[in-house]
Length: 262
Image (cartoon, rainbow, N blue to C red; front, side):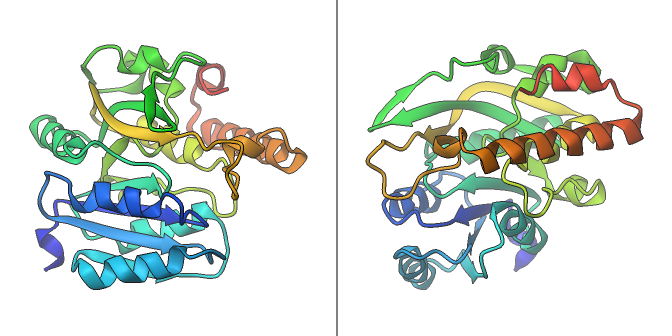
């Protein structure tokens, strides 16, 4: 039954056959019971589709959707709208999680009745984990804290990732915290909108996510690896424009947000 799920995890899949099994294994072996896994394949051209079918046949809690290539934001939004869990999460299919990640986040969310619950991510390079050291993200995960309004901790805007968090699904839908369709850097507008509307945000210093950095030899490049391309740069500017428009409507402190975003 759909109301039995504690958490729905939306997995964004596009040409990740080299990493997909490891990602799915880290999900199906989570210590939290009652997890729904929704894998959205954005018209992969490698063997990702076959791998997803294999796992769907093996695990009853995995649902797969194969759509025409419309981008990760559209795929993510589709998965969020399909989700039936009390909480939802979005992850990229080349990344993995510690096996107790979602149990840790779920228990904290329930304890604090938080709309957004955040954990610490690490970078994964060739099987080795490292701290995320660029910009000021470490300020966010340095200490455990609970905030009732974003104004209590503006440094939170430095963490604009969607994948090291779980969100209360009802909260997310009611406040339309979705990603702009067609945008590459769509996580920032979604996450920041959630921060602004959230009644309570809980932050942990526990490691809950391993963000894979692909090597130069990778057949399919990640968005991060293509960030110096002109179209990639243009998309980042579009993301800024989107945020400015949204924050203007809310009469929010635009400079405060953007200074902690880029």
